[in-house]
Every structure is written in structure tokens, then in C-alpha cells.
Length: 85
Image (cartoon, rainbow, N blue to C red; front, top):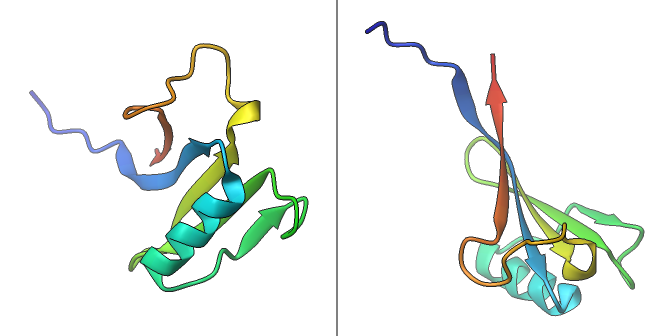
């Protein structure tokens, strides 16, 4: 079987959080950086994003009130987007 490499790496991983501000602050301390993007703003964000690692991969946190129906709230409740051909 030919080896096809269509996955080019992680684009974005999004996690859901009930307390987005607490999650943002916790990850900022873990990563040692501040979120570079917060929508609609820092005081009341619905989404925050960090750039992490050598490739500046996107790590996003979404307010859980915007989670799609059926989204798990515990482990495995992440959405991962890939760069592809």
C-alpha cells in the first residue's frame, strides 16, 4: 500500500470550558504566555486562543454554552482540526 501523507499537522484544537476566564488564566500560567486572541474581548470572552509549540499550533478554549449538542463535557470533549492536502 502506498504511503500517503495527507495529514500535515494539527491546525487547531478546541476545548470547552464552563468557566472560560478561569480556564484561560490556568492555561496562561501553564504555557507561560497570554492568550493572543480573545473574542469578543478579554473581560467577557466567548473564545480564547493561544499559539503554542515550535509550530505555533492553535490551542483554543470555547465557552461551553456554545458547544454543539451531544458534545462530551469530560475527557474526549475536544475538537481537533488538521491541516490537510
